[in-house]
Image (cartoon, rainbow, N blue to C red; front, top):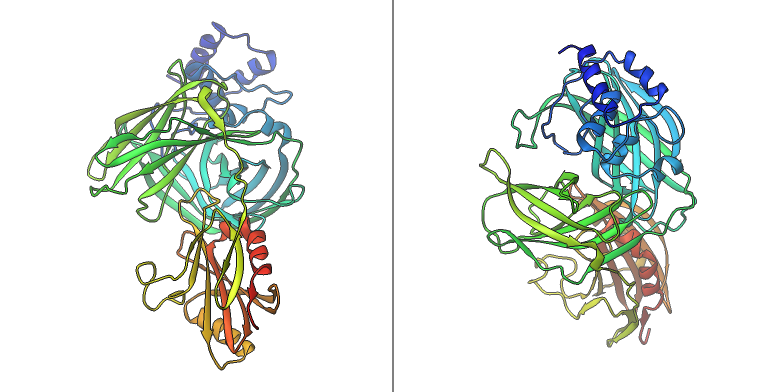
Length: 513
């Protein structure tokens, strides 16, 4: 079937059900692109793998719930792509347009637009590759920041404009970052790699076959204008019982977040007692009429985490819908995925999550007194069952702080006293040298104000290749002793609770100084 025959077939199919506006009708006569109809999975299942006009038409033909792209008003050529990804029309109404571009070694990247609310950050790109394999699709890898805090995309979607150019959208979980000033949100995108890949030839696989890789540095820095948007809400479920998938692996729906542009469903995997082979999984979400809402892989993780949470972009669903989450799993030695369970989610039974009201507790030792939040867990002395025998925290007072992000890991505060003849400045210099020896990057040194003394605040960072971690040492000297209070946690955790840490230090009082 040639292009014209294909064009005619699709056009006649649409005319049976839709009234095509004249301006769209004209586009059919100009449609000369080669379109390859493939109903196969890709690495991220909610991609469109077609030229723009064809993509719009296929949505109507096969998905039914979307309309084709109009050449007027708020409906644009990318509207169906965004909707299928779970992004509603408010994005196009409120987005900030950038249109900044940079070209290196035959690859031109233009950052098109972006928008942010309490739930999500969305960024769009147009990518032109001069010498690509026009049968291939692409994914990009890079580093991204919101107000200088590192974030990773939780989903992305792609469409073709031509054989050599693509539209590419990323969604980030903005709820992980506490943003103080919503009127000035800065985003940085540094793209380092563009990978070309082909779709798998296996219908029930979501694997990709990689080809060329384009490596360079394409950097962008933009400010997003935050318009009047809806206040995001977080919901929980009373009945969040675990659903067994395979032996000793349990899944449960934990939260449902609603935002101005999209919604996020959180699914927790607990394999604490699992001792089997590695596996991969993806999710398919269906509405009450068994119509597919979305499909996506579990999130990429560098380590074999025993408990973790995946975030699924749902888009608009009815407030009281009963949706189904089908779980597909593939063991490391399997060739294809198999459905292992179905989780039923009744949105009518969601309960708005209440903000936890905290009170302060007081702890008094022979050396100092401090106040801490009653949600923090205090352990008087950290021993070798918690840390190694050479840890700088051994014997310290330990305060575990509940996680404020999607991670199941917590941040901590450690209070340690060291007998030393060293002056405070000398102690600080030694700590900075120790950080360098341990490949910890020193970021800043400032004055710290305790309740009845002053000292220093030393901020430093390290990374495991996936996450950035922050150390903050607050040090002072009294009674011929060094008092060292150290925060340790992810960069995001520190961003979210640094005002609490400042209050903690401001209430820290040394006795009989």
